[in-house]
Amino acid sequence: MRIDLGDGRCAYGRQLTGVTVEFYDRIGEPGEPVDLIEIVAAPVAFRIWVTSSAFRRHGGWELLDVVSLTQEEQAEIHKYAKQDPLSGSLTIYRVDPASGTGSETSATIEECQALERAAVWSPEHVEDRLRDHFDGRPNRWAESMRLKP
Image (tube, rainbow, N blue to C red; front, top):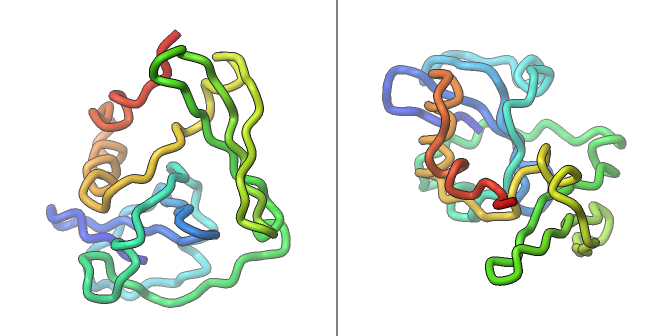
């Protein structure tokens, strides 16, 4: 999909499984011709869950076409960090690509540091994060979800 960032730039993402979307470290211009294989070969900026409203054709994100997942991508287990708001205990949430089911295991802060927080993002917050990513500044939404030691 192509995401118009509203400032003369656009970003690109690809729905993997369920609501998991991979966003690429690649800027384009709205409406420019694109090579989808070239886009999915670009480095990944981040991978998060996105609310299903982002995938509707009448929404703000332009659905371009399907780039089928490789066997490796189909088998990849996506991992996210979860933190209980009351106890502060941490778990790693894993999504099985074959069944779509999730499981959790206890984890340390060190094991969770490099993982995205388990959260479903709205399209508007994703667009903010993409603009911040390309402008090299921290994103307030991502910062608000940072794990607490």
